[in-house]
Image (cartoon, rainbow, N blue to C red; front, side):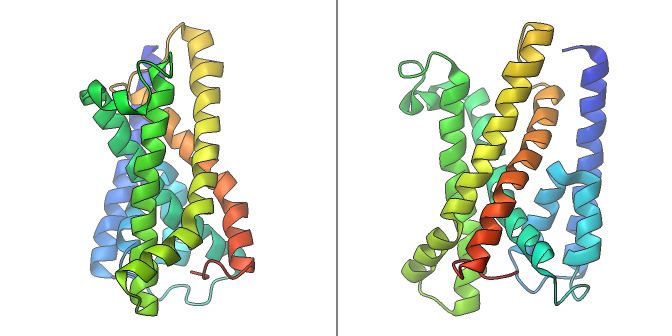
Length: 227
């Protein structure tokens, strides 16, 4: 990857980290009504950067916006879903880089000729599990549900939303890695490269774009509660 692109990527990641740290400190001082959002907001800043910080200060901070409009409520729901996906993707990508043997059950080598697709399968599994856990800790305390009922409610509320997010994320990542970076530079950035994580930041925004309408539909149908 060219030096200038690596520098841009490093700055973008550093700015996002600062935004996430600011929010993390703020939610510790002003705990949100829904406890899991104390994790969702900082994680959202890892890809949303200044935009996520602005949205948090305007609509997420405890007591700031207790009666959000439908678009704001849906955006919160999408970010709640996306934070779980983000953590899952980060964990999966890092694990696959440090311990490549973990990809064997996910189709590489064997089913997939390109390890990237096996990593994406692992990404989806990890993102789905963590995302459902996030939804469980939002729904179960609110409704006073048992573990089994809470997990079932979380699956109904977020399975489609999580899938929609991952579709947008994978699609954007494919365009950036296979359609832009590889043709331009003859290679794809490794997970150890800041450029890879810059692409992941942009891909997460793609995930938000595809999860937003799905969350709107789920809220309208009463499958998912407004946040």
